[in-house]
Image (tube, rainbow, N blue to C red; front, side, top):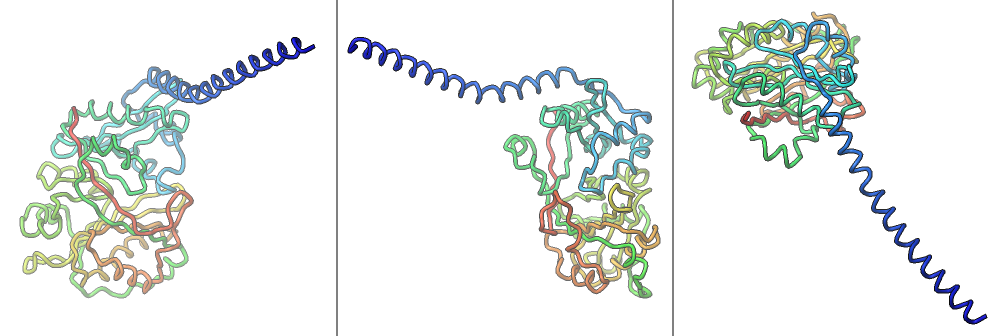
Length: 362
């Protein structure tokens, strides 16, 4: 009986040891398997993706790649035809399993020396597999440009990655503030007669601001002007781009005078139709002297009201040292508080930041 019990005990101990070893192996497999599957999916996906130029016939498939991009203010549907027609823009798509799963519009600036991606996106089915960056890099190489200029907001998670920080050089920061104008408020908005110096100017006058050293030093101290998220250097080569593409979609207002070249403001108003709200409007402000700010905002509100008098989201972009508290007071005076345009994926803070980065294209 004693011998049997000891043998049985040793057998149980060996069995227990084997079970423990198997559990450790299983635990290791559980840890490694997801990593292996992710790597395998990424590799198999990237190896089977085709990249090519987009066509007009791709429009529906491109729009369907992803809905609710930019939290309901996506501009791609409104801009797609213009992208296809613009001489300075070439569009590319990614194809996986015979489906359009990625899109990137490659905009050429600075006489073809700078590539700036616009409306880039990928389908959720390939998200995280490297297709987004592969498509953007493909577009960059096809463009023949020497550098990439990229604008991003501070809620973009990619800009916090070490790989991004190592690849891109930071250039400048601007603040942006969000508002929403309800249709009923817009229709009832009483806009007083303007008597100040604010006036609409043409592209020629604006390009003179870009090339006159004293004025450009005041308005564009970083040597860049960002209009509707597109970063322009202060170069004559960019004037045709402003005239042909962005020029068709924006209105420029100025309170600058030759007598006071370091006083006043320039505001640039760009509007387009969106998926969630009827319209979206970007107002880019340059200059920091706010004496004429009220008349500038009223001029821009006139443009919005005359468009269709429907619900409109609005983002105002300013220099970092701009008096945004005064801007808020003006919008409260107009009956347009800023704290009611918050979609689910956006943080509660309404004052965010826009960054410009650049990198060399190898």
